Image (cartoon, rainbow, N blue to C red; front, side, top):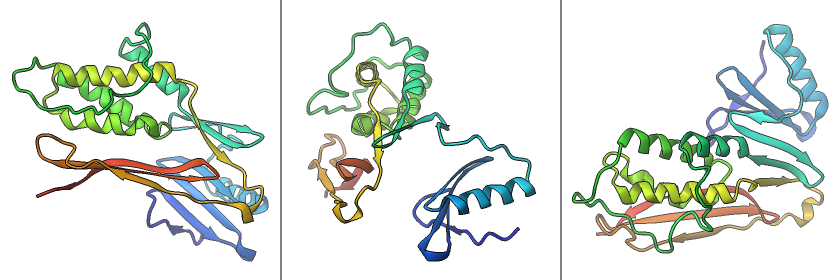
Length: 233
């Protein structure tokens, strides 16, 4: 069955098919799970019918859950969140009874590797960090703090574990946070903004800087990143 999809160059697992009159069909593929979307309902239904005639598949209807991410359709658009996944993290690491924190990290947090500090279980620490990193898909507000603690997974110390628990305490108090993908009510009023910042030699040990950006449309986030930027010499 020939479908003429083109693999997206910037997003792994996304395929695009251009139809007539400017219509587009997008497929997000992960193993045997598919998300089908586009700007023409008839083309979406035709594609699903063709796939179901060729393969043994089930149509689960409108998107509500995908790989731990939950979706809710509201009047303003589509809401994405990971409330259940976040709750499972807190239960898994026994953080449900801790007091919530007002921020994911202390102001001007600077973690270092101190060999004299008491070590903690590296397996447990990696499990915590790995779980938090996946939560960043819908919680860009924790991306910076999670990026900082991720640097110490090989030999974590008490201060690093406390910083990780601070992130989880913040999550406990903000379980209801989500991301809204708004409907395009007026294309002429669409406004794309971008914010970028970086510290200067923020890492005390290797002088690496951390950069980050946010890209909102109509004040709703569509893209974000926090990572080590470069090494200053």
